[in-house]
Image 1 (cartoon, rainbow, N blue to C red):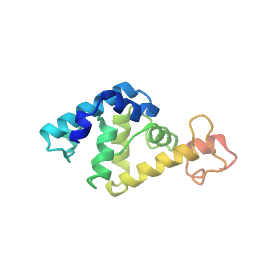
Image 2: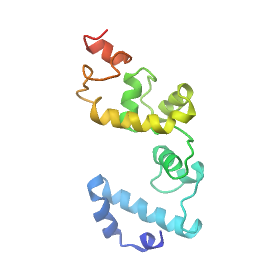
Image 3: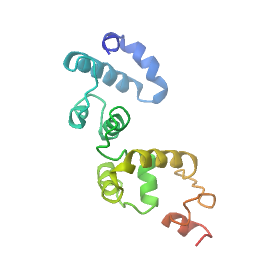
Image 4: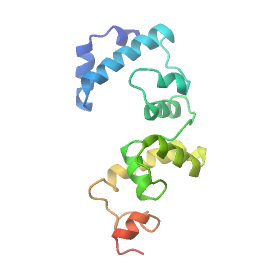
Length: 154
């Protein structure tokens, strides 16, 4: 973490360039590395609220860190795919990621939060795309309100 904190910002920008918004991301990464090095002995904190105070970390990233690094599900990871699929499946009507997270947490048992969010992300990338979902070929089409409206499967 210390070497990242001392790294030249242009080097960090080169590494994250392909992700988009690379200048802002590089700035946040460097600042996060400095804070973690100085305040947390180079260790990422395992507290959700503390993570949210770090540069560049919002609810989605904090949930991913808690799930993957610390094996603790605090909330439901909501990215664009989870947002789209949870609406199409009728689990929420909201477009607000925080409200969607709360809606999903109220209907899905905690032990499924991590895996289900990963499954929804994968499914959204491979089958239930934003502009052209493959409802006819989707194995969830008999359960999905959106598919029932757009396909011949009833």
